[in-house]
Length: 594
Image (cartoon, rainbow, N blue to C red):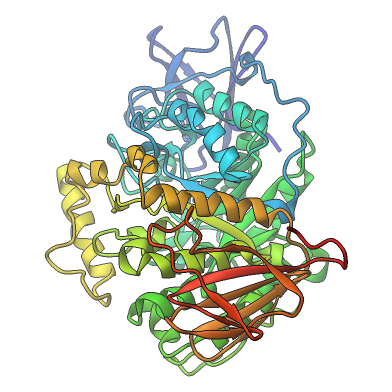
């Protein structure tokens, strides 16, 4: 596969661009004022080797007689997505991660973060400074929300324009490399959120070069990305080359693929299968992973390619989140409507299977929803009780810890981190951060008005999306979404942080499948090997205590609760004085802990 972009070599730079819409392409070297004709290749590719230039050279491409555009495979846009591209030499960075062997699939514990809002600096270097904290918390993988460059000063990242270029708002390409290098030194994997289902509305010049869209299919963003129409071979190549560039040039450990339901492809080999195979074949460094964001509960996403599946490593399994959100905070509108009336019985089923809707009829449509989960392994499912979407797509970006009593938040946190599925925390969740995570953007005035109006329309079926919704274009919306790290030093935040550290430490001792059963509508008992978790969402709930087991942890310990109300154990029963979770362990005879 021919690599795209400006690729430095010993005595110059080789430029390669896919531009099937153009009859001729001219390379414009900005600093030298030179314009050089590119050489056409097969299938719409153009190439040119230029001697005597190297890293730092700025350039654009002119298609036919149009004004010059940035390179769609630009490695850096120092003046923003509308400015000239800059040649970057990835080999100039001296990596220190030769001994990095990655994190085992089943040991992944994700921490999702937005680079711009995670620290006061809002940079790659700012994230790097927090790596020891994340390691000591018990995280094994940080998951960066999209870092590909976008228009304006800040953005969630899903309005991406320069797919190969780390955003200049966060730092330089070498700053990102240094972040990944340091993460590996701290035994942390780095996953990257990438978007191949749409292009951003401003500055995504790729569509001027190539047939990126098709009217054969449609998505919420309009015409679908062209994965199976005329010219689709080059589109698929572009996205796969983009992914391999993140692996090769940045040592990224894996991907979260955004909104894969919108990657519509009727080809004999689905794009996701081709993508997964390309990542699996990449043999530089440890094994890489591909995880899809997809709410459809489709088992073939993680089934082997030789058995007709896509061969991906996992999916964001939303059922667990939606069940917990409904059960604790009462959400029942919009996409929560299918979960109205569910209880802890459905939570237990999701824990054992990986998802709840496994072909069952949808209460809202009446038709079957999901597929059989019997062949899906726990490590194929990513569970959460919060993520960027489930916070940011609420009217004011409020967190679960804002909407339920702290005792309930602590209880479901214990369940999340006890389950064998791969847990994901969203930044600040570990201390119950008081800061919201709101939807923010920094578009031009005309587009900004459309984005603000479109957001209200998209979520009009959700309670609260009225005139009070924060304006995404207001700078205050971004600044309110930045974490306040001072909170971690005082209760109740410090106590919630203590609980997360203790649970993540305990998680390393857990093993095996989970057996879960509901006790009534709002209580649950779950067992993994010698460990048993008892969960109650109501005061005075009574659950059976496992015979011969001793308490390992409960959420009402003084280290976790300002006004401790520990559960009472007597007569083989556990009585919860308020909502909480208790973890017990059976020890071999003669080895009981004192």
